[in-house]
Image (tube, rainbow over all chains, first blue to last red; front, side, top):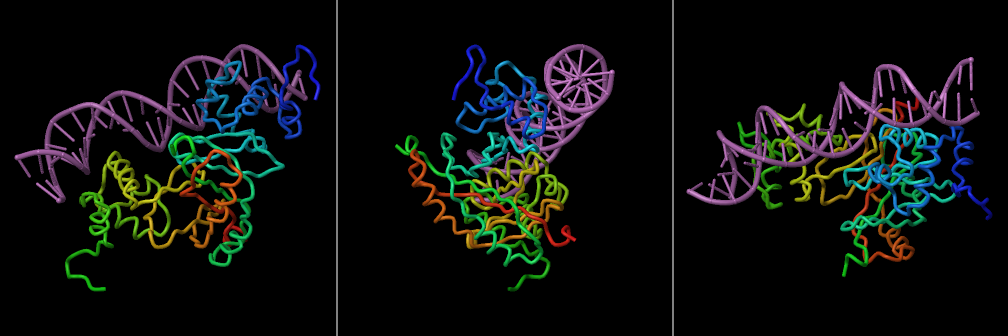
Length: 146
Length: 146
DNA sequence: GTTCTTGCAAAGGATTTGCAACCCA
DNA sequence: TGGGTTGCAAATCCTTTGCAAGAAC
């Protein structure tokens, strides 16, 4: 992959935005670049503190809403009070393992939820279809376990 | 099951509280009775509106925290902005199917998450153990599907 | 040029906290 | 009785909204 001198690498932000059919503003590119460089899902506060250049909080909330609807960003929740956001990866639908002590997150793939959904559909009387799911694992990371 | 005349059936609230090692106050018994009679997980607002006699909101938040720590109440989240609370059933670890349109909830059992947790543990480098999980299914109920 | 987006400031909600009175063990 | 709990009121925190200025297409 090549990049022109003086042009900051933007992690395909512009392209992602165009493909999703939303305007590629400076702020949106900055947000996507930020989320692409952090390797942990981020809170709104972390985004606020970390994005360069600074973006207004109202804008961040509005962007997250729009980019979520557009399928570019995924919202996750570890029951810690704050929602987290990460870039969604359409190729690989991953889930998370969360350390209950330090909140460190690692990803994993291979939640074969269709089987469970099938089981569930047989049990519940009132449902026509199931089309999405959330699944998170909680435990203790090696560092915290010492 | 028998109940004495004049003594309102309390759904074992007193006993549950004692077993969990927390004080059995009037408010806590009322909360447990309320959650035992509703068959859908409740928001704080619903609890506030529904509990008899009335309980202060600060007290409700404090109780939910304490009863959660004590293992009597479970907090769940369907990404709709508000957390929900239900009595936890130590015998039967169930999960939920949620209608994305009307928010109706049904329970199901048989998420055999151990297998997935095992898969996950092999993939993630930094985790020592996994001991809990969250799992929710989202779909459309029959009524809303018509 | 028109429409969508942003920043600012203020509003709105949800949740938490300090403290005195109260209740359970 | 004594420490845990509650109710009230106020504070705090998170999120949303109105609107005028600015940026994208």
